[in-house]
Image (cartoon, rainbow, N blue to C red; front, side, top):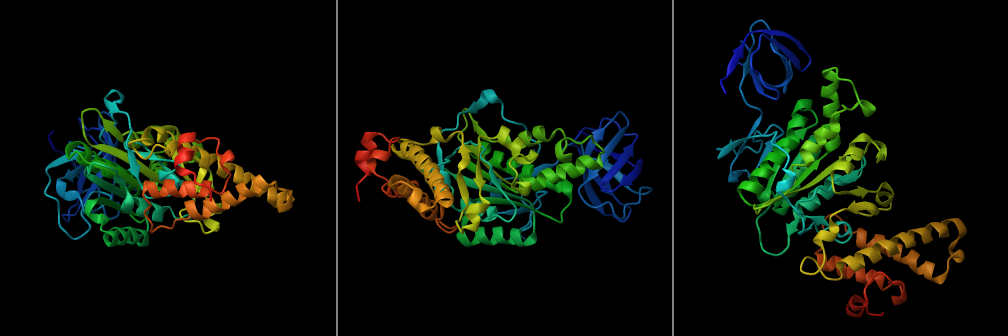
Length: 458
């Protein structure tokens, strides 16, 4: 499409600029603002009418003189340069290299707005991804092509969990090419440094593409960062046939930027001031994950969001829960007990876990032990609460065993630290070790053949 140049900038208010007498301008089109001193700034079209375009600037509007500035409409949206060489690189939230290794020579340029996968073209997720975290692998299994968000709270170690999963994650079996795309949205410089150093130290950087948007970058850049990451993932998955895990932290910062831009546009606010289209907007990110029939690659998403005031009913986690296939919830109570990572397995859920476990995927006894561990831990927690109210002596002998099981489950199964990497066999064997605290007669959710094989009286 032809490039169009206009010297009809009418006004600039904060990050918004109104350009008049425009023709055939598209929504989301990229705009270059050329200043008289040769400086250039980028923006994108937020709204269009027949003869006017509202442009949102990616950078500050300070120093722009509307009399001698030009708005150049480039005829395309924001694009990402891609080639196989993006692996091992660190980019800004706008896709500019920030690791000092120079620009990428692109094999192609891809519009970052992409499009959700056609439901008819989707293939059903069914293969297990090992994260090295027992609470996820053993009880809330992640499956290739799934969207499984982590719900956290401010001050909880979700960044360390994200780095742990990015470092450990792998697809078992056929040595298929695996990559991680990591997007950090609105984080501090210290956090950004932590991730880069963590990935370099473990060697995971070689199979990782990083996009880092800092807290002092413009709000509009936060809107672009997750889309940059997902576009890179689509290229790796569907052009290079890789299996890609996309980790985005923290989506709450993304939603806050959405609210900020919506307020600047004077839109009618929805729940808690967030725009009414936030559900659709989040879906446009999440629905780009999955597997496509006839293509070898896949995209699995692990978005992380911190719940304001630890409130699961807040619009961001609430809407996310409707779109994704489950959630992993971090618990402040477990964190205060010193359990790392503090994954609260009872309210956590992976709706696709049944598809990724069992014989030839993990192990034949996985489904049975998973159900038994859930049930025993729930009963053990009840027994501990009862003991707090009525005292230890009020518990029956079997309830004391369940209370002991709950304590050991938290201390051994959940509390593995952030530097470990448990295989699925180690996780399942640890589950059996803990179940031996209980008498065989209590393990009613496990089939006889698995009890005979794995339950040895101690």
